[in-house]
Amino acid sequence: MSYQRTISCHEIQPILKEIIWYKRLEVAQIQQDMTWASLQRQLTSAPPIRDFITALQQSIYKPSLIAEVKKTSPEKNIIRPDFEPVSIAQSFKKGGASCISVVTDKKFFHGGFDHLRAIRYTVTLPLLCKDFIIDPCQIYLARSAGADAVLLMAAILKNQELENFLRVIHYLGMNAVVQVNNLSELDRVLELQDVRIVAINNHNYQDFTSDISITQQLLAARRSQLQNLGIVIISDSGIQTVDDLSLVRDAGVQSVIVGEYLLQQTDLELAVRSLLQSKFPVHF
View 1 (spheres, rainbow, N blue to C red):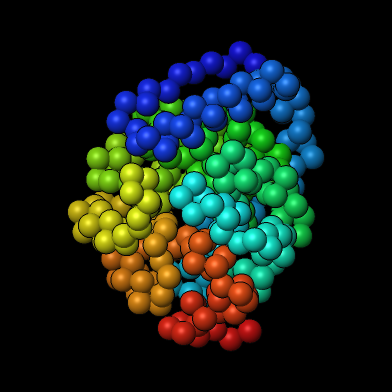
View 2: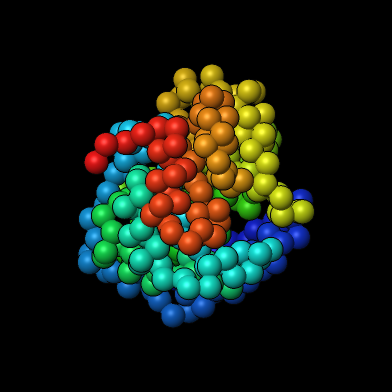
């Protein structure tokens, strides 16, 4: 592949610097092993795209739930010892999740595009590929594995990179979920063209804490601007209770990503139902 890039890690938190360093090696290996032509050929056999945004908006739950499949995290190690990606995703669907987030990073989260592909062929919900995207080849691999949406992190990408990747993702028929951690990143993203979904990450990579007040603070400052632009707003990390759901919903959130809390429960289907239905009952 001829596409080359460099990432400035200035002001990126230490754990992200390490992750990006390894991600560069991973991308370099992909570029060595595959040509653009071979990547594009894979798209011909990719599963049909499902409408990620519509699934979130048409959910009877407010906010809707994107349930996350991941085995580990850098700070907590193994989250769920009996990790079976497909059965986990199936349980999340049965419980009432609107979409599934699949963490595909190998080095730090023990994920992979194989997890995404396996879930795609057994679960009908739209899928979000959650990774540290630094190169278009990762976007092509995500689509060929069945992704319907791809996460882009403002913390590790410059504006031009975000715009380029947004165009690639939309060209392939998917949606981009642009993740921000602070007001500065949100303001950067609001200057970009064709941003459709913004995820506010409540996770602090410095001390590994989560605080949903980050969502409240950012939306207190920019809620009207986001709504005027028709942007779907997601809150990610730190959500564990129905009260948390109520707080972010009142702040203006339309969907939430919940992973670790659900994965730590014994009965995954029941955990999803309990989180959603205790406040917002559903009829099956």
